[in-house]
Image (cartoon, rainbow, N blue to C red; front, side):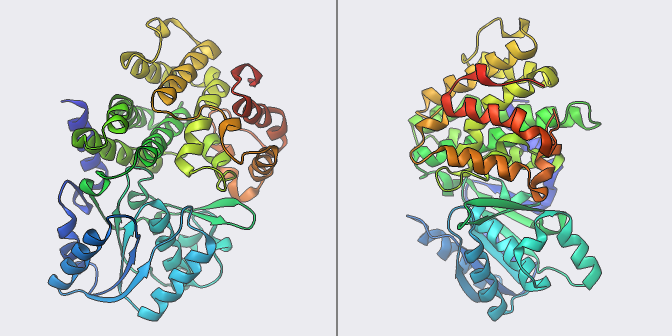
Length: 422
């Protein structure tokens, strides 16, 4: 079984018949939605070239006997709170019995959150954290409308997961709803929609997939499901490392594009098996200067060095992937501890350089020391403590200044030596 066959096999085990994916599957949206309801609110991203896809979805809904009660513009990047409120109001006015979203992670996340607010009321702040939506549904006896999430970007895998990332633009801080209750019961991803994606978006999305796999893999050490996490994560990382340069160099390479779609979906599988940690936590504070995927990807090499003494087994797996791709030294398997972490981090930097990706925060336009201060403050926020607790080297709020701040300073300067190991 080759790597792409392995990915398909894993996705079948993850989602079974609830997930429809591949090239040319978009016309199946109507029949899938009709099994969930007959009156739809259609939440749509608009991007260059999106109109034919929107028409295909709307036409397939009509052909399947589904009334489109409202066509609602999707969310801006990072799913701002204001967009969630607007989408909630428009869904409320339409009174649908099924939500159909078509977009990247921001629009899908906003649609998830908007339906929570429509069904349960209140403000989004009261649902940040883990399991609070399910608890409210149980207390009230209410239900969310079923959701068909149609993905457009090889990136977040929001169409497959229990996460909704929502941003307060005024404070520049992103927070997270984590709840099984918001997992879309049906998902669809037509890989052809990604074929026109620009190089920067392609790289950001693919490396977001690496971040999901990598952070969950690091956090799984010592846990009962480690072997499954390693299989899923190694497959996802391996496919991305093998195909990303091709997709960036030749945007028309359909094989590479399809591979990235499969791999980032495995990133979605990974974050349903475990949780992300340091890089994702810090990315929530950089939303005004970096896309989510880019922020995570830039922080991961630095956290790799910080976590290295506690994650030697997964580091050996990841090191071999980068070594086989010609990105790491041939003797990487002989290294251990911090030295192994340093070598893997340097391999990540090498891939970044090959695709024209920044390797230190000081290279990012608009980045300032205030962003580090914001990240440190956010790391001490109880609503985000799951990320601290999920680190392979768990930190308490009291440890953040001593250990997370040096990681951030290292990322700003591009100097791994600044990082302090616990």
